[in-house]
Image 1: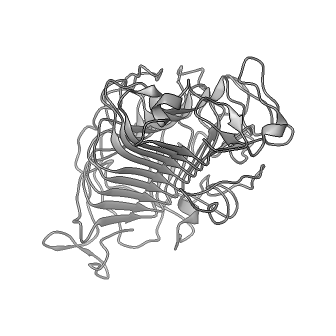
Image 2: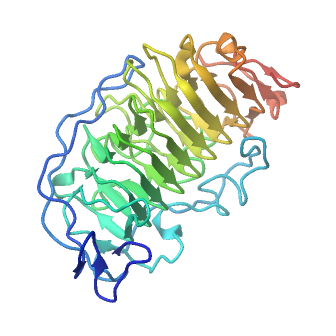
Length: 422
């Protein structure tokens, strides 16, 4: 369904000056560039976007199209604690657990199947601030395995799935303003793979003590895509209750100043890094230049067998400003967290009430370097961050060492654990 709240007709939609049967969104054009190389270790992205095809969408929420899909929720394999900034744990658990489902099948009003989108894969039509253009329960499957490019503004995607097999570029790229994704799934092509192998929460391989390539607990790197959401410009952008898996990098920010929010979402089960030489990351900035400002990463589950960062706010040439990372469950990767890479002068940084779990072992440690000096600055806050030991797990050789007795202790920015907060 494509609609504008408050302006729907029975068989049409009021669109900036007229009533039309359905909506034809997008014209044939090329997508923009994906984010480039990273001094923090990310592989370089491709530059050409996917083209669009002609077509229109029905104003009905049901119709022909794909109905099967992965994602939504998975039963939890470990217990957890923690929660919102200064608040209790998220109701029902962390995203992806049985009581906190995500993705299109969990969207309120999900009709039981998706409608295949045929309106082109450059989404250029805009709504207004008062009446955003809404895409509901659509299945975006670009021809040739490319991605969906959102250049329009005042748009909301609800209960949609975005599929891609662009191993050198994006699944979804956004350059428009005021764009929201709610209860959406960002996945590989379901014709190639429908779910992570050995799916579990917070990610496949939980409790198995696995790192590196070729574990058998990730999809092949030729079957996924590089960037889940590439937020290259524009904004604000909100990603909420979404399910993102099969990526090289889950969410990439660029040098934007508009508010970018990733909340209540499950980013998990990256593609095996070997085939594409991915430096696997969760949400973050990877390009080593001017970093984003005004980013919130709140109440998510971020976990996978991987080799770089779960929170990937990597090296930058100027300060980070107004970055909040709070209430997340984070596990796996190389270093689970790179919180602004010790970038001198960074201000209004908040890293609070996160849980760093041993469900998936990190290759090196939970925290990159020593962020103590950065978080001793009066504008920056580090508090309430806890270390969580999954029963039956233990440190792997060559990584930061810990003991089961540290379960539930506070994790400080120098990677030490304490019974008191930082």
